[in-house]
Image (cartoon, rainbow, N blue to C red; front, side, top):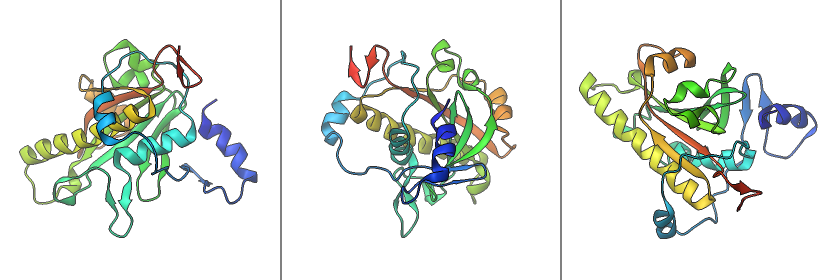
Length: 220
């Protein structure tokens, strides 16, 4: 059972926890924005890995991961941890797990349910994507990119998705998680499963989880 299903039961009796659940929406715990590795150490540790332990990420770790990816770090302006061209904020982060598909809402720091069921196998061509506990999918909404032609929309959205992916790499290095970014995707099939419109495009996907051979957060 995924943590959001457990949370839906537990949060009925929880107060003052900073977590709340509405229809189709699960609010994440506040991100932990202190601690972790020094930047230069995280850069030294950053690497791609393609073998994952199947255990789901705990709520706090998922909260930290998504905030690092593209969360709001300047509440007064709503601006994000990842830059975007002309402040379009056109990249949406979708979270696919064994329990369903969710879209990350940065201003609310919440997950909005998009679809039930396990579509992880659609997020890439490699075998490991079907069992990695989290596959993030970066989707560009071209309707937000006012004043740009198609070529510029393709270029800038690819760059902006790359910034998000690198934030995820650095967080995973700091947190001891395995991660790999991927571009080999059947975008038509995945877009249909996500319910995307013609103005939206899957740019990249990124698998995240505990490294294979890790138990209780320690390398075996």
